[in-house]
Image (cartoon, rainbow, N blue to C red):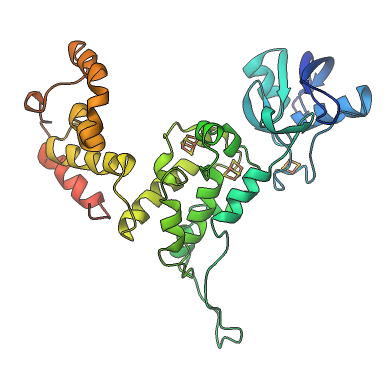
Length: 324
Ligand code: SF4
Ligand code: SF4
Ligand code: FES
């Protein structure tokens, strides 16, 4: 039988009222926290026992409505799923509670998720299909076809990945990881007839999957293990397969990577930049010179091919689903 323990924890809580405050501030609350509690219990107790004006969103308390997403010490957290025990193990007895996105705060931990929902709506988050309203039999999907969705349909729209994405922060056109996961969910559905329309939009410059910098923050942030970066990679492949990829630095980077591994069995960093950037490589020459001096890149004729090149070539061929 596990015993319930109690620890004193100091919470620095983000406070802001867009109607009254010019700048946000942090309020300190010292509380006894039991090993049974989750972060949402702490939020509730701050409101119920300390300050009734403290505001945050929650609804289901079971990790399915996605409303209680926030950040603890800068880390995306679904408050109703996250045990305080784990938080104390990770951060000790002092932590900062903040909204998912401070710049979108309206009232304390409540944010304006308007941009998130706009991006969601923009990816056609529904099945595009000419449905026979009086079908003679069911539209069957085999277990293998259902598996292809790869759990993308489990997304609870919490926005944790979206507001952890560095590209979303600096590029307001970028669809973001949650929208990509949603687009994948329908692109991978055998009943969807969107053709190339949705995937072409997912490939658009500045908005689409090619602007993802592959930092893996979305994978870290997702409380449902959707792994949005994996869906982004699959959308890359679908875009090649459906022939909608436009030649740009990011798509040439993917092609160059493939060519380099198929040719040498190892990555030719210098050649990859040359292939991706084309003539605009000139702007990278000072950096390239420094990398060359430090031995980080070698000229094309200096590449040492892998001893296992034949084996690697076979692997590249068997795993390539798209023609480059
Ligand atoms: S991997 Fe891509 S989509 Fe995910 S957080 Fe990083 S930049 Fe954003
Ligand atoms: S992919 Fe994960 S983190 Fe992103 S909105 Fe869906 S459930 Fe939340
Ligand atoms: S309250 Fe619904 S997911 Fe946390």
